[in-house]
Length: 128
Image 1: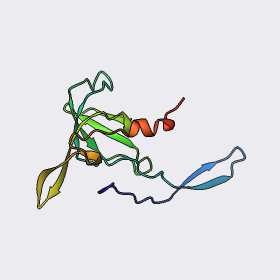
Image 2: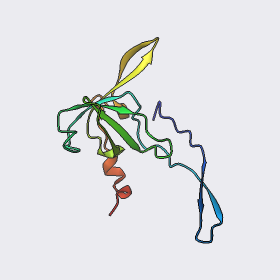
Image 3: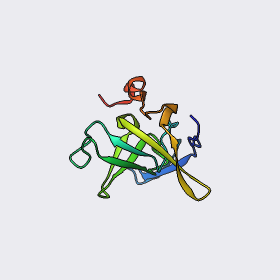
């Protein structure tokens, strides 16, 4: 997956237990399982909600590095939605900043249409 940031930095979570003692645990984010990048654009082919109907153009925005497989989508009205990466079914247009200019560089997953079959391979990650 060319261009994917696979840097996984550990982080710590702190909480108080039932006895009032401070607890601390080290966590590591999961590996990134997709090739989508912030700034990519897509057309919705599967209805995500009332605010994201079929045929609408959306932009992928940066989300939490602690959850790299969850994408933040933004529609033309500025509304946002968080979805698992395999729910993004549609034609993806990849854009990058090259020499100060925004240039389209092709589809995700190395395919012209930018589609992703990852939802088939990773269906075990869905909640029952």
